[in-house]
Length: 252
Image 1 (tube, rainbow, N blue to C red):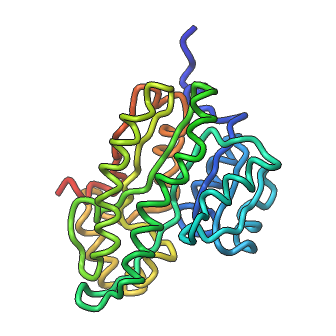
Image 2 (cartoon, helix red, strand yellow):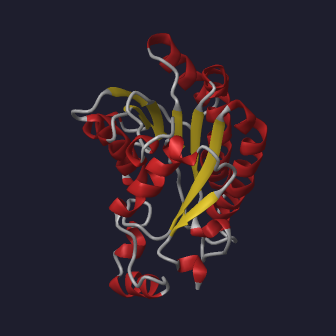
């Protein structure tokens, strides 16, 4: 029987794991999924922020630095020791050191690429066997405007986010036949901790808004619809894609 428009986007009864769930887009996405009926597993370095995000929602928090050695394996073991495997993974944890190419250190390069590119694959890989057995799964990576164009002082971040486009395609090719849809969201400029230096300068924020087709920068609420689409049955024939949620920034 065909699903209704409402049931297509339903995530009630699902469990979603969100990295970077204590701030910014990750925090908003976690709250949006919880408000839509999902249980949420929040992952990040700051346990107090994670607990604030969880608030009255159903789920659990895991204070883990995902860029540390073997962190994804430890997180898997922590979750599976007391909880069920996630149906949905949102890889929202990220960092942008904003350093010139001539100055970025080797350690900063490796940390940035590891957290933004390596971790999304390694974390998903840990939970794919459970999704495969269930015949259903959703993995949502976070790309960027810098996935397709260069920004000043963004070489490590841009390299990692460029990799996310191909990683998303490759993960989809590997796992979609098992009912696991893998897609990415590429946000434009949203007010978060990561973009705070940009929004602190009204002139820069204004120029960024003017560069969009809509004429404004993003508001967190703009992310709700695309997120629920990719996290639900509504995206059952969509995989390996990157959806730009950027107000038409990349269309101009």
